[in-house]
Image (tube, rainbow, N blue to C red):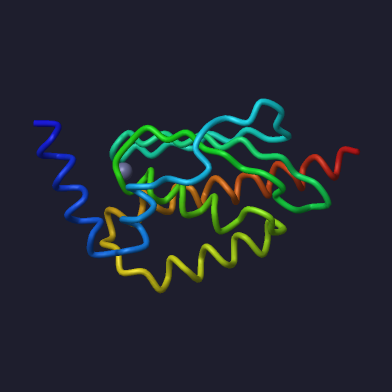
Length: 135
Ligand SMILES: [Zn+2]
């Protein structure tokens, strides 16, 4: 059963080469030992949970790693987003991810799983801004 689901997922991801590539070869997987921010996002739709650990310097995302439990789209999305935002300031990263997702042909239900990681980076921006105000 699991094998069948796995192949179905790959089949769907194949429609989008970039997502398929990230699903098969996820980038930035793991947990940073020393991080500035830890963001956890969950989707109630298909029980996806994505955790990002991030180091920030000079308002830029210096390093980012993720662990994802969930469907193939959640995993591919987390990998894609981590790669796009790495090395950029948070606003630029969010803009670039939004632009990229807009151009991608993903069905509505799967889009939510991919966008989960975009939400995570937006949460990260909120956290960083809140920290700035208190210091
Ligand atoms: Zn999902």
